[in-house]
Length: 430
Image 1 (tube, rainbow, N blue to C red):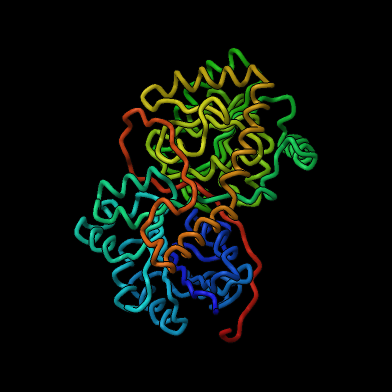
Image 2: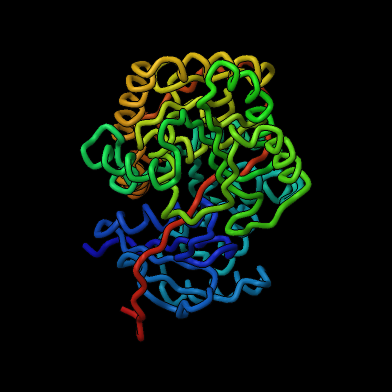
């Protein structure tokens, strides 16, 4: 039997591969190649500098089109899809594209993969169009139980279509600091970055208000009084792949000027450098003031054996086990609780190690790209076997989130970074 043909249509925001992409493109790049040989996948995305119109990305055909005009981009993709003739078209994070691609390819099943709540907000799509898109989609995949619940409140009729597939991480690229390889890498990166003899707390992500970096900087004076060897490292910029500043990022810089000995800003770094920063740190903090759909950066930090302190915000409650792999703190009392937990972990080396080991173990058990592909393939197999269709009890395991303590949902793109893949020019279709 021939493998099922599946097309993955990216939003056209960033090319694939790219060092500056958002998590949407990265998820596609990482897990789609792992679907082979069970399916024949093909990726559709934005044309990029020095990238051919058509090439292999980790042995998967990737076709690229101009995407300055998104309507024209979808038309071009629609034409290419007719030539490929897939049984399934998976639309990545743009529910508004579902209707257009279904009209252009009426015989294919349309799946929608939502990476965040951003593009289901009224700012991007009307309630009427959103409902139509959800009802038109044959399957809706989300990256957390939190996002599944959020969708059900918007369109209850689509509940039976929604499945959860967690993103993952490359455990080889993000080695545990407690492995021989990791110990060597940690020593190297701490020396290279001038962090020897410092207790390093790291935040890595976009410098935008909802990520809550100002809360972390505000408590540095209290922390430094108890731990004069403290260094808080802020890695990131307001925009993907850019060093442009904003009013908020300049405010953070100003806050940091008063405590230069204890605060260091590192502008946006390429994805290849992300593991090194986590390896060099002792603790990771994600103090989001509003909800994350998932928060993949937490998984990346945990893979290196870091305890993570984060807010009880959306999908992060499904990643971090409070008191086991780190701590979850309440949004309404962020600074007080963050101070308490940081002082506890900064003081206790053995507790950091214990939590770090459990963090790595949790990632290996639940959050690798192999797990992502496995969950997706199970959904696809159930879709083919009509006896299993829409039977939620037969999909892969889910993770029970921590209590959300009454927090309200909000829109947010998942923080993430990108890496590059080998590109091989293709002269003709396979």
